Image 1 (tube, rainbow, N blue to C red):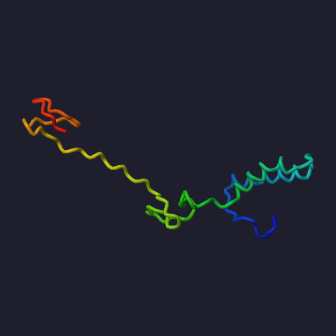
Image 2 (cartoon, rainbow, N blue to C red; image 1 turned 45 degrees about the vertical axis):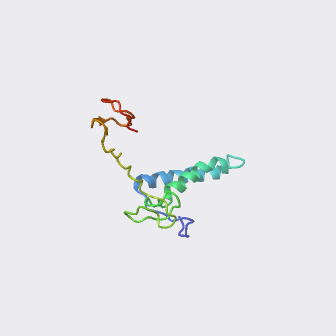
Image 3 (cartoon, helix red, strand yellow; image 1 turned 180 degrees about the horizontal axis):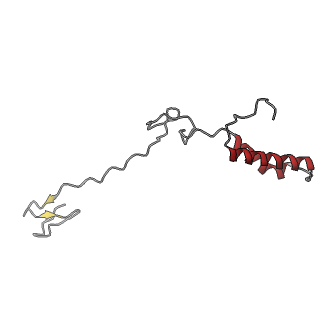
Length: 123
């Protein structure tokens, strides 16, 4: 392959990926050379797509899901767009302080409107 600058950064391929790339190039060249198609582009698009996918640099993993900006380790918010990166932890339900009947001192159940012992209205 010639040493002209590529349209996208190339990464190092392992042996299995090199073999797949070479096979895709072979298929691409053969299909294009044979001219088996009136308009070869639609039939060659899957090969072009796989070659591009195989050879392009991987996207950085540590990016904002909203704007794609790189994020620093431990960041809670994106420095570019302000998107929250770490979900808020749910607050544990607060236990209500126990309530007691003002008349007889009986402990009242949650949401009680009347005392279950003496019948006093407690709302």
